[in-house]
Image 1 (cartoon, rainbow, N blue to C red):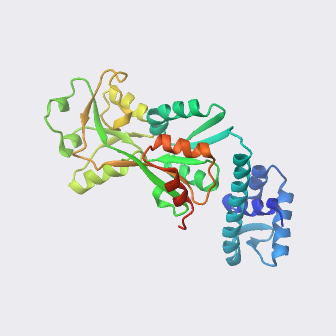
Image 2 (cartoon, helix red, strand yellow):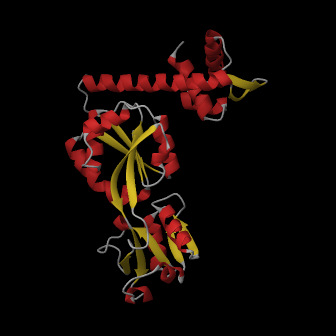
Image 3 (cartoon, helix red, strand yellow):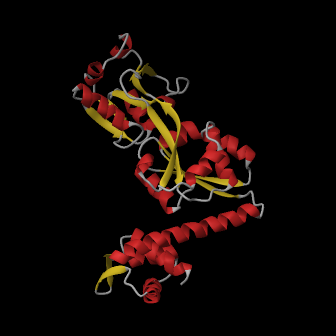
Amino acid sequence: MNFQQLRSIREAARHGYNLTEVANVLCTSQPGVSRQIRELEDELGVEIFERNGKRLTGLSGPGKGILKIIERLLIEAENLQRAGQEYSGQTSGTLTVATTHTQARYVLPEVVQNFRVAFPDVRIALQQSAPEHIAEWVLSGKTDIGIATEGLSQFPDLVSFPCYSWHHLIVVPDEHPLLARASVSLSDLAAYPLITYDTGFTGRSHIDDAFSNAGVSTNIVLTAMDSDVIKQYVSLGMGVGLLATMAFEPKRDHGLRAIRAEHLFAPNVTRLAVRRGAYLRSYAYDFIMEFAPDLKRADIERALNQEA
């Protein structure tokens, strides 16, 4: 039994049993992957995969249980490597953080800047995507840390921590009629075309829930993952924007005005997630605590080692 066999099993399950893709990921040949899988099955005495001819079609009953063991073994192998780097005194490396555009653009710059001062030899790789992809990347070990407002608390194999809360703002062009109102209602908003985030991004569910619970129909004419895109189209007069508070910058967003909306939409909580059982380098803990100062290393370690 060897790690290449274990990786072949894991990647086959991750890539829909397509051995060509598995071979590309593992930098080997398709026959090599097939051989690794068959050798492990022969050693264990069970069929891990179901087959149609030579093609893999799914996991067998025993294979589902074996895959969980393989994933734990590979996680511990990664942890062992990181522990060796830690105890050998290495303070260099790469910290990979997956997050959404709003967090990367408006929240993380100061955090990253402070972290780089403390750890100048650590390279930070920021990856931006949708919350579901962020969760998948953290679970697979592709990234060390995931940061998003939605989705991260739904995976039992992730440990997620609440970091800070925020609200949505209403954003309109200068001299828009809504600026004359002492307090804007959901019905007031629904009288205009709306521009906001894609479903599953940046608290969009709270926006939808507010209108649905109030029985107010909306005309959402444009959605985007990117806060800057939303502001651009609001500035063109295409509609009223619903935006994360931290994404509005009065000194930079010329021609736009913000209206408070915490009375309309439920507050949002941005969460940071890591893979349960993962071994984090010391600088990863420092990054987490820079992003969420209320978190303590002992609390993070305790949560990482708890069973789901």
